[in-house]
Image (cartoon, rainbow over all chains, first blue to last red; front, side, top):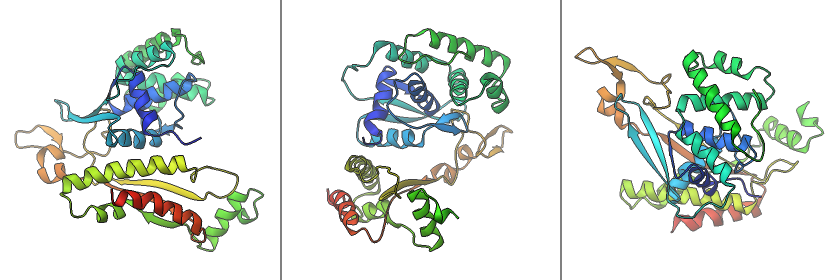
Length: 170
Length: 150
C-alpha cells in the first residue's frame, strides 16, 4: 500500500469541514484522527508543538501544488504568520459522520487548547501515565491554569463523540 | 558489530556506511529547475512544485519505496533550510529575532527589513538509489524525466 500523500492530506481538510486555520491545527487534527482509528495513515512523532508528521507537512504542500487544497499564508495583526488550508474538492466525504464531527470540533477549537489536549492524548497512547502533568512540564509557557482547564474541557467534549476507537481516559 | 547484525537491513546499511558505499542521490529539484530554466521565476517555481508533488505520488505508487526486511531500494527526502524564520501564528518564536524600531516598538526583524522579509526557504527534493541497481535507476529516470518535459 502506498504511503499517504496529498490526497490523504486533502481528506483531513475536507473532514474538518473544508477549512483549517494554522499548521499546528492541521497536524493535531491529523493526529487526533489517527488516535481514534480514523486516520489516513500518517506517522506522528513528538516535535516542538507535540505530535507532528513531516509526511503530512510535505503532503499538504503537495496537495496545494496539485490543486487539491489551497494554502494561503496570512500575517496576523501582531506580525505572526499562519497558513489557512482550504479544501478545493466538492466531493461529499463518505466517512463516518461522527469522525467528521470530531474533526470539525477540533478545527473550531482554540489552537493552544487543541495542541495541549491532543499532545496529552498522544503521550497517553505512548505510555505516559500522567499525560497532563507531562504536557504541563513540556509546554510550561502555554500550559497556564486557564489554558489547561480549557484543554481538559475540550478533551472531555471530544471524548463524548462516538468514534471507532475511544480516546484514552486521562 | 552492526555489520554482523541478523537483520539484513541493519547489516547492509552498516556495511555501506563502513565502506563508504553510499546510495547515489538524484537532485530532483535541480533537474526540474534546469528543465524549466526558460520560464519566468514565478512560473518555474509553480511548475517545479507541481512536478515534485507528482513525482512523489508516482514514486509512492510505484512501490519502490516499500519497506521490507532488506535495505531499501529507494529512499527520498526533502531538505528544508530556512535562512530566517518569521514569527509564526502557532507560536514558533524561538527562531525569530526581535528588534526595537525607531518608535521603541519591539517587532520581528522581518518587519523592519525588506531584505530579511524577502528571504526564501531553500528546499531540495532528493531520491536515493543503489548505484548497482540499474533497473531501479531506469525506473526512477522514467518517473522524473517525464516531468522534465511536461
